[in-house]
Length: 422
Image 1 (cartoon, rainbow, N blue to C red):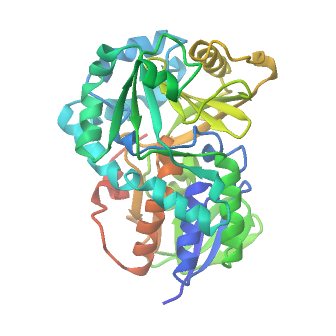
Image 2: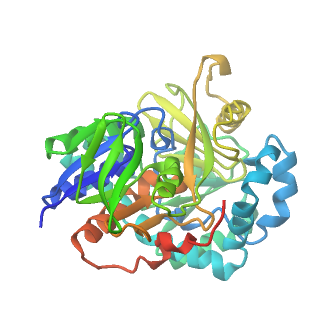
């Protein structure tokens, strides 16, 4: 039966959810503080990777041993601002515990697999329907190492990928140089994830999908949600500065703002900003047929039209703190080191970005019915996997709205955080 569903959040997840619901015949209103595809959104600035190999979680065995390094090394790929430790202490303890043993890490990987294993095909279909097939490309994703021994040191991660159906091909010597000319001689070994692909413009793609959604009848409202009118354990309307929007169901896909929205419903969704950075530079003299990730520097380079985007860095900091543009400068220097013959502009001239990626302490998204409002569904907490995960997330949400159960969503249930205090 057709319902009026209000989707809170106009990023990639909210936009794709709105499409899935409109296809099912529901009347859909999306409310967000920014235009879809805006540079203010986390989905705008990511590396664009559609990677089935991203099942390997950030929380892995031995992570706790590296905390002093993360606090002290300003140039590392993962940093933790000292000022954030008191506020984030409980979250960080649970985060480090989430994947502290191989068994736990493998469980997270298995729970992430459904979002990732066929993401390229899902996005290819979505892009075709939206009239922008050129924005999604296959061909694989390349992860490079200094040598085979360095690749071997990542054995646990690659075994997780194998266990979850990820296929790859090992490359060395001239075969690697042929695929990726201009790559630094530092890298002598690579693993090509053959079923991977990428988005040529995450922001442009989100904007194009929002236009497609509008053609399906989805209404876009600009505004910040200020509250929910509730009665009998259900939300009757979504409140904002312009008034209220009466509804039958609500989907909360508010990114990092989901924590605050959840509090309005007496729910707990403990999201922390996994802040990411990127720089985007001219790439006319860089031959790069597939995106490349440097295993040791922990960042990726993706071709985007006539430019390349270097993206990476994980910085846990208090929300609202000013960007640390040293993180972006590090990425630029990593591009220079990885492609030494490339002519790269000075840092002052390149485009740079920082965004707040919404991360949970157990590395899994929050998807499911609110514990305190039976007609509210969450679709948030994807960390750096929002873009790649959006089609499968939308499928789950549409099923929940329609009362259909086709998959086990217990690992993503928002009720798992009921006793959590952030």
